[in-house]
Length: 547
Image (cartoon, rainbow, N blue to C red; front, side, top):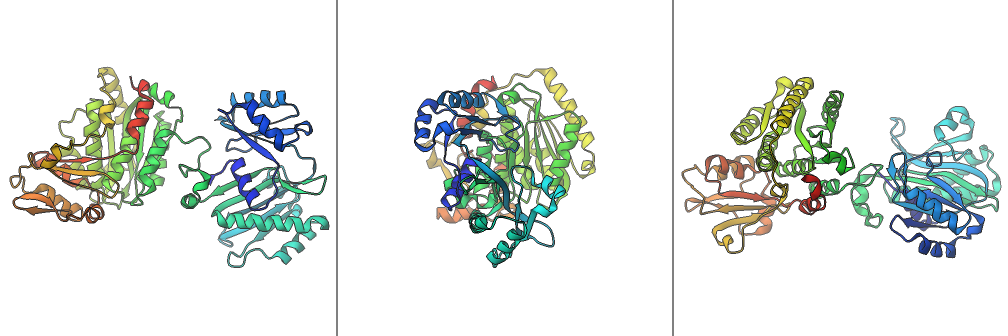
């Protein structure tokens, strides 16, 4: 689920006719004095303003994330102070400055999805006590709570809602106003595919208005594409800004739903990772991933990444995810803890592992790698990895199903390899050699057969290096066996089955098998160039951390 900031949620409420306080958002990089000039046009500062840190957490008031002021100097001082501290460990990038309301009474109202087997749908929750945790009120004063399941096919029954509110002794003169707000909240809930739309507190002002003083909205991440106006780059449920590496990883997943490539940077401070002592963690299967990660944490490993590639992703998708994980500065080891007997065809992971680690070895020779991978095509996958990494200058070890339930052993082996790696003090190369995308020049292209795949990668066959038929057309056989037959034999050489770029784009399944077997049995005539959605530019941004 994706959480919206308070100011985003209030904007949505406002355009749907739900009253919110007059306010203005000020960014860390804004000139506060100039911003206040615009604020004065909306708010009568002398009556007081609330200054609220825009961070994705609850309990901001106790944590110093909400303060009040009544002069320009006070606003500048309080806002500046907020920008220079952390609220519950989170940096403040924006503050919301809004009118201070004259409170007569506070309510709580939300519409959320109940996963109870008896409901499995939206419920309306209302409390006559707002501004506090709803759980606390429900436990101590259940008579102050309205819990109303909503029939999604019919919506909210207004008459039934009015009766229920009257039963809670809500003043009759605000019932219509309150019902109207609840109906509009439900419209927001439906329109944005929300999991939760919560207003706490919903304030009754002394002049008889109901105003949403605070709100929390969480949205199903699968529906974010329908709402570009929200400006959400990466639909992840995180309480901190998305990192540059996570943005790149999301682009891998965004338009390719063949399996999963879920990547999170577990330490958001890239400078901290660069100091060393962290490993790149990669797992297969969400539950198995978490169990393996927890086992490594208990052994005092520091994980810089959480990468999950499951659900039968393509080899190219696994390759891209691994490349992002291994691109972080200061990484001292890589662990693929596939602690599950997977039913997906593991040889696609094998091709990806070989391609990315052969490239990485040029940057970090001797780098420690432990791979635990088991399940469908396990024997074939181990053969692919063993032959593909033979004589590659890495410290690598490979394990199968006999170690699936023995993460302690995997941790021991990784510990030993990392110790040996540190003792050798092998000089690393240039990170740009790992991430730089290089293509044949225009003059060279006349010697190549080439085409683009679905996600923009390019497959080049250099006919000058091709040794067919001596290799037994290893690339064509691999494409037919592990792919969908994008290559064919023509006049004693490999060729593409169609001149139609779109047909080829759809036909290639990005299994990487052609490049692998050409490298292993042929003349290394095939090169797959993989654009990494701006990874090279991000590396340049942090280049000083790799030295």
